[in-house]
Image (cartoon, rainbow, N blue to C red; front, side, top):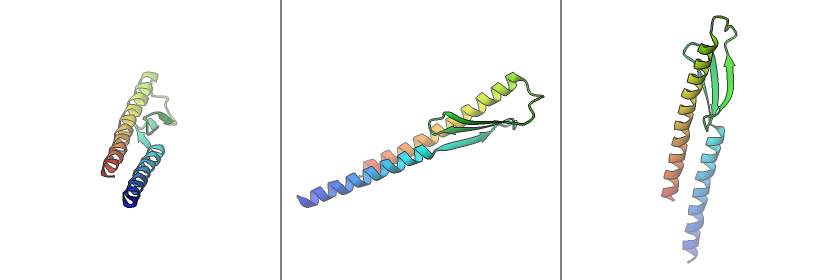
Length: 100
């Protein structure tokens, strides 16, 4: 009976470690992307939320519509990639949990 309990505790420790590792990776996940026209640099977090926005120093030749579209497109692409990375972290965690 003691061996069964030891095995259970060991498996629980491994599962807790896997969840902790995944949590840290998700907390630390940041993605920065530059727009193809160089006007915008965005940073998103692991949930795809915009947490940073940098604009080119000279936007005098850029319309508001073009700038807005560039921001939205670049942020959307970065968010999609961040969500893909998030899914990968969660899938690895799920896989390691099923091994315990």
